[in-house]
Image (cartoon, rainbow, N blue to C red; front, top):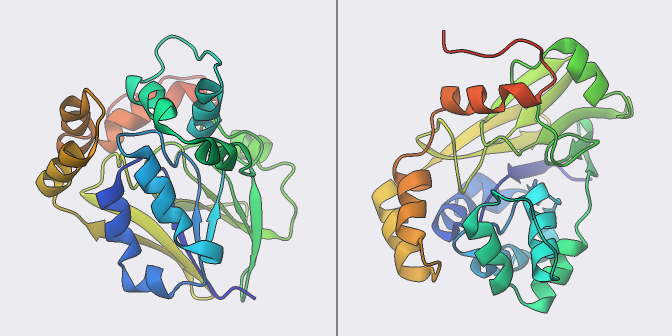
Length: 258
């Protein structure tokens, strides 16, 4: 039986942030490391995938919407206008083995955690890897999103929106561990530890300037300097991100700043 799980999400091809979290003592000691999607769509796609694979049987990788997109592009398909340039570039860097890996990822994935019960890991929601739920999503929408989740599942871990939260939804914990590679509203790299004692939201301190230099030096993405400026050195706040995502979580009214 699994006794502890380190939950990471949305690594988005940023190796120094991933490495910083993997060096955390509680991550090193965890029985499992589960990454809830959007693994490689970023400036260091192959490096991040290879580092995760080094964890061997300790790692469980869950499919995200960006993982599907990379497979589509790598195999000659087209994505909608507005797809980030870094995603299109990253798809071209993947080997056949990387593409096969991403294509074979499951969504969702359920793991039994000692002292807790079943934990379901997904990217957007259990029913759709691109669906948006937020910390303030309305109860009626949560009921629809979780309608098919078995009662044995006591914790649902999601990603996708890059903002960490933990909240109760009808006696069940729903957790978003945030994004390691593109955190919104966080001063570090957020992740979560699950064990019999509860849900523990954690943040690993990072030096944005050092991360930015490392990514620029090690990535061949042509616009990497602008990418790190946008997502490492001046990342969006949580309020900016909530406002951008609000229209996608089923609510009728618009969300505005208080």
